[in-house]
Amino acid sequence: MNPISLYIHWPFCVTKCPYCDFNSHVRPDVDHMLWRAALLADLAHEAAATRGHRLVSIFFGGGTPSLMPPETVAALIDAALDHWPCDPDLEITLEANPSSVEAAAFAGFAAAGINRVSLGLQALDDAALRLLGRPHDLAEGLAALDLAQRHFQRVSIDLIHSRPHQTPDQWDAELTRALGFGTDHLSAYQLTIEPGTRFQSLAASGRLPLPDEDQAAVMFETTAARCTAAGLPPYEISNHAGPGSESRHNLAYWTYAPYAGIGPGAHGRRGGTAARGRRGGLATQRLRRPEAWLTAVEASGHGIESTTLVSPPEAATEALLMGLRLTAGIDRTLFEARTGVALSDAINPAARDRLASLGMVAADDPLRVTPAGRGVTNTIIAELAADVTCLETVAADASYGGETTGETA
Image (cartoon, rainbow, N blue to C red):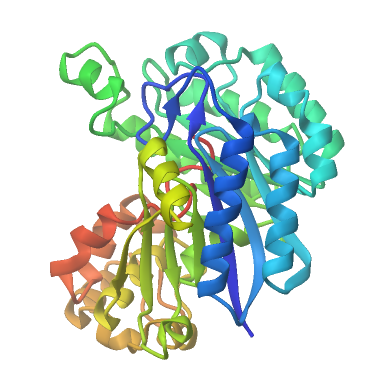
């Protein structure tokens, strides 16, 4: 039975962080009963369209899903288990902000069935947290981490490096402290300036003093070295975990496995078998604006804005874009089974040979980016892709759940 993962998007936040371009919105009042009913309806619609799959993970992303009532989380988990058969050790992740209000609900989330939490600490410095617009201070964050480690089997923490004014030595000290917390997973992301964000405006006006490229490269390399020494080697560009503690949900995205996405703005990929045997499958996208999505669900029972047939070349480019982020690289057999395209036909052989001669990629099985090339993975993917005409579109559409660029917005 084919695996499938479930992504559930909760679009609301207490505040909008100045660096965030995720589908997150600040609303003074949320009718939780209405939203619970709508999410359950959207879930039922997607489950009916993906029968014959086995559920392997559930991920609550956002936005800030730790603002959801635990009763809503429980209802959605129970419904998902009714809709699909599932693995006995189903991974169920909730993104959480470490404010004291949200941490107070951790016991309720654990009782609802959450067994993994991704905690958005983002920085271990109060001045940096204020600059990032985070709704918590360091003391709150550390208290929430302690509470999370008491309630959940697995805890991941998010940190952002290459922040304004940050030096490599400061990041080294901050990362060393974070690795002492004893979590089994750490996501460390370089701050990127996204279009339409407050940080973009500040950067454009010269009011956001970011580290230069060389300093950012040192921080990236320091992260891999420090995490590896601590027993959490990188398994993806920005994600580090102990053996067996990798995010199974993220691995589904990065290995191009089918997944269902519900809630405002959520994307999904129904595999070839769900698309009446067509290789490549179907891409689904929900309406992005919360109010528009809610109106659509009330009118038609789902929030889908578009359902698009993904051609085998497009699927291959998506799978290449995602798979080369992994330290382990791309399994050729799995790649062909999920895209309908041989890996050798999806890459430019001249580019592969040139990059291999430079030591940037290992061209054997699996195809993978070497440690020497990890800092320029996006450039390597652009050179390797045979179908470069659709690479830009695929990259723009790669909002796979909540974790392509981060676990917590």
